[in-house]
Image 1 (cartoon, rainbow, N blue to C red):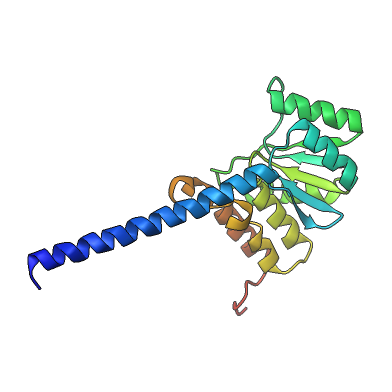
Image 2 (image 1 turned 45 degrees about the vertical axis):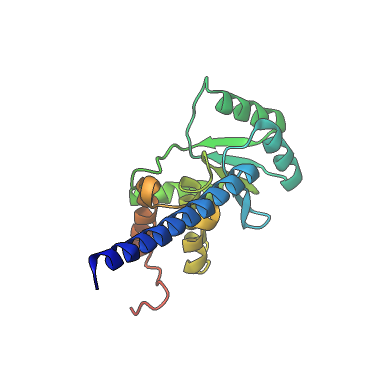
Length: 200
């Protein structure tokens, strides 16, 4: 194989690799737009537990009325003076909804105690409850997974809560969000939940 032929092969491969990268970026971009447009609103346990990203006040109020939401767990924490927080707090007050603030970071692994606290907040909140963070993908995904584990739902349902379907993509530029996956792995070990195929 001569050098000119090798160069043509490399050019073809680099062209194919570029197309793959562009295709992946298009998929990730499309998912991002979908998540943003929908505020990433989904049922974790229909009629009881819902998850989302940060909603504008009007959309939050509409969903609270539609689903009969009684509690909101805000994983971004109390942020008095920030427009989004002041609007959410005002909406909760007007609608008689409990607003529970529990700040966590998607970039830092949580302790088992923190995860137990989140699970207890969800368990003890008046239902239906809405859990949210900024995008509804990473922190909210972990909280939703913890609820699934502690409610005795199949472990696959818990793992699915932290997936690209909900915008959780702990790779490339978003690799820091893998802290949520590591946290869930630790919790599953402590909770002694067998993962599919695991022998105890």
